[in-house]
Every structure is written in C-alpha cells, then in structure tokens.
Length: 102
Image 1 (tube, helix red, strand yellow):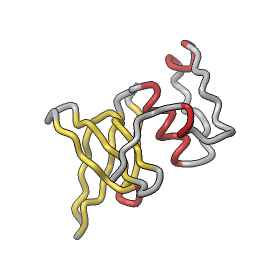
Image 2: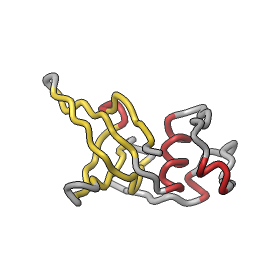
Image 3: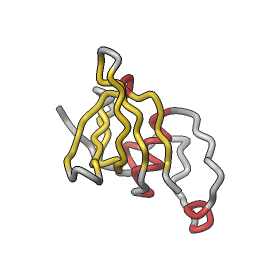
Image 4: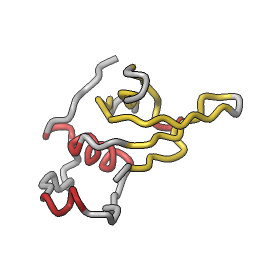
C-alpha cells in the first residue's frame, strides 16, 4: 500500500489550496465538490475531526482524530486517534460522517 501525505500534486486540478486565516477561524463549513477535496482540505488544516466509522456487523465507532494520509488509489484514509495515540486505516466507504471540531 502506498500512503501519500499532502502535496500539491495530489490535489485535484480545480482545488484552491490557498487558505486564509479567516477561513481557518470561520464557523461556516466550506463547500466541497468531492470527498477527496474535503480530505485534502482538513489534512492541510491539520484540524481535529470526529470520525463516525462502520466497523461491520452493525458496530459503529466515534473517534476523534487528525488525517495523517490518504491513498487515492486504494481510497484508504489514515487517521491519528488523539485519545489512544494510535494510527488507524479505514477505507472511504466505512465512514458515516466526518465532523470537524471547531
């Protein structure tokens, strides 16, 4: 598995990578055109996110963490769990919701 960290060549061509201080402090959620655009945005901000994850057989986990990396080929998202201080990997289809903590 090839895990990639955020770099300009991973961003979609139409992604605006300029983030102003006002945007970081804004309480309004930005509009995203794709899940990958949202992932790269929050990875660049390094903000805390509450991940709601389906683990299978009806088991749902809620974990606070930060996005460490995203593999665009396999759609695996690597998350650092801030409470347990461990790194977890999930596929995109396991996520029910991603809630940024402001």
